[in-house]
Image (cartoon, rainbow, N blue to C red; front, top):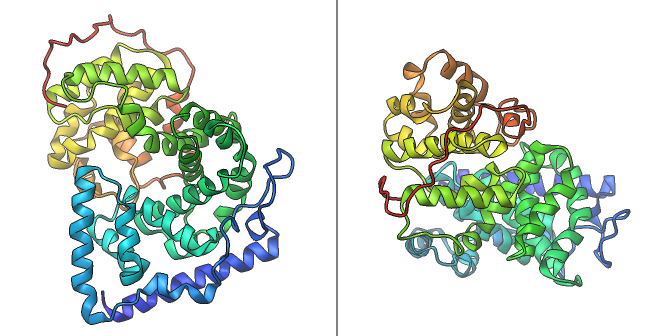
Length: 426
């Protein structure tokens, strides 16, 4: 990293931290006071000073810059990259690797590595955010260091880790502990948008979904209920909240379903049923549990199974088909003609919305944009509506169609996939 670029990022983060502290102090935000009681629905306790002792702001530079001289940093960063990539590939716990390298390299260098590696990264920095929250002892300081790195993945990790630690002093099961945090999670999100640039309401909803699931663990139904209590009839924010839940719950849920010997079709059928049973917004679950189609045959099978469903499950399935179809379309943009060809016109719009609605720094964004010459009138209409619409910003009209309860086309005759029917890998 160039020295000027590093210093600029460091001082920018310190300025964000100072601004956050001033806002919380002036506004009396709950993150400015100490936590000392079990959450009460009428008076939610604060969310920041949950570790002891709290590290003063003057001790933060070591976490940001690291302690190694510039001449040794490149080799140490290469060692980090080798160990992290191997652990990520094996799906191992990556938190200990951040523990080992943070003091040497500092948070700024680690975040810069991931932002360069993949501008749309996210989950890669959850563990770093948790570590920063623990090491600083102060949520707003951890958020200030994280900034927007990895599409706020570091911030989400800091929020989840902080609330998880807070829950350890609460009575009851893990699910009950998660639900007890709802009042303070609500108060946290009520002020976060004004203090974190670009942190839309949906972004905070996603972050607290992570927090709920971190606490609930195997009691993930309590996490879904927590999202309902937080956002009520605001289905869009509930959806974003549940995406945080199911992103974290994915490993637990996959232990109970077929993952190796089942065909692609059987995996889709089983996991779609599971998501439909777990949530009123099954699309939040499907995008993390359904297998990614790697061939045109698999994509056709997925959309065919979507056509056999009705109501919110059907709508969520078509939107998820487009979301998962990015893998194929990014490799050959002309495949967009085959990716969302099943179902009725309204189904196709939902599918295309899943394909085009992405984070602004999404890895395949330029390749998705290259689909334009291959789109018909409906495709271009959806492209204009969804491509570039800010992710997590409430008010997306096509996203709302996933939970629209108006009568939908009758499902096609059901064809339960046989265990012996092969439609490709998965």
